Image (tube, rainbow, N blue to C red):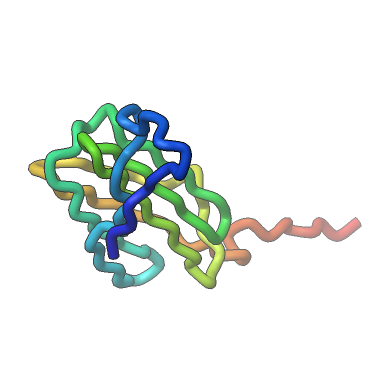
Length: 111
C-alpha cells in the first residue's frame, strides 16, 4: 500500500520521500533459522538501514521518491548479533538464528 505525504502549508517536500511502501517479502523457517527475503528494486546497497532486536526487525531503504519500510515482529526470540544479510540484484536475503535458551544455560557446579 502506498501513501502520499503532503503538507497543508504548501512547503517544499522534495527532500522527503513522496511514497512510503511496505516492500514485498517472504518469511520461512529452516531448523533454528528464520529466513527472510525482501524485494528492494532500484535501492542502492549503501542506503539500506536495518536494526535487529531480540524479537523485532526493522528496515528502511530509500529510492528516489520512495521509502521502503518493513517492520517484523517475530513472536519468538532471536540472537540479533548472529543476523546475516546479503543484497544482490534488488533482493535482500536475511538469516536470523532463533534463541535457544539451553545453549545459553549456566552449568551449575557441585560443591
